[in-house]
Length: 187
Image (cartoon, rainbow, N blue to C red; front, side):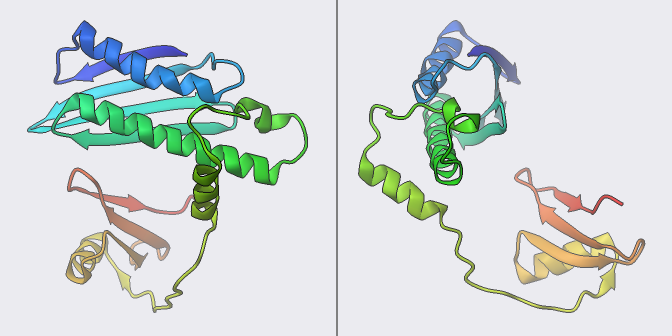
């Protein structure tokens, strides 16, 4: 894996770069052949929180994880664990869906050290998608500002509404930075 490490509002020391490469580089053990893609790592500091974002584009899969912590080294450890879970989860999905040889199944190694049958069973249980509630409601036409106010009133992190301007179903959501985002369909 080729590492592309950059920093925002932080001076990247050699120790920080080496630690990131060492920890994230351990993910290579999950692959049959070491991926030749670039691993994009962004380290940033805002106020007291330190953030690491890691993106690993693979054939047919995009692994991405982000972690915030007051200690950057702890954030690197946490983001590596998150990526390991994603790889194991995707590997179980691939093995379950594609029983034939070839394709994405050959991307991941069969036996990885440190993984036990219990951990794989637990991941398979996490993989089961269980719908626990269905909710129906009338879409009242409103503008974006009113939708944001409604979302804040009900205390949710997103709100589905009919946009009064274009009469389409839209979603407003609260971003991690505290600002708001809008999802609208492509027409």
